[in-house]
Length: 76
Image (cartoon, rainbow, N blue to C red; front, side, top):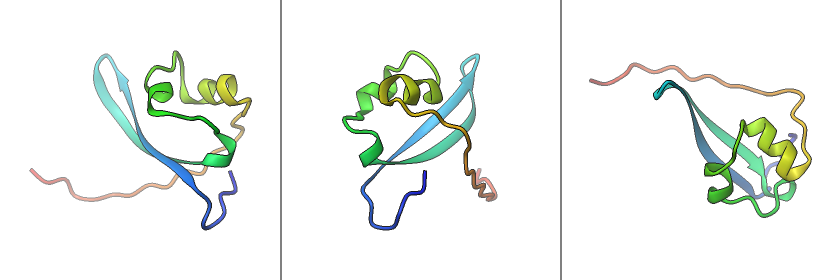
């Protein structure tokens, strides 16, 4: 999204699950200026995927992503 340094952002965690089992956890950062009025309630109660939510609620179509991966040894 071309987020510049110093810009106010929303940061939240999104867990993807299948049959009640969490498969993936993402930390997502979005610029506040492109998502005015975004709230925890809106994110939790969205009826569909995040990409669909961005389109329906804010008129934003996601056409690409930048994903970064971090690996660490799990503790007991």
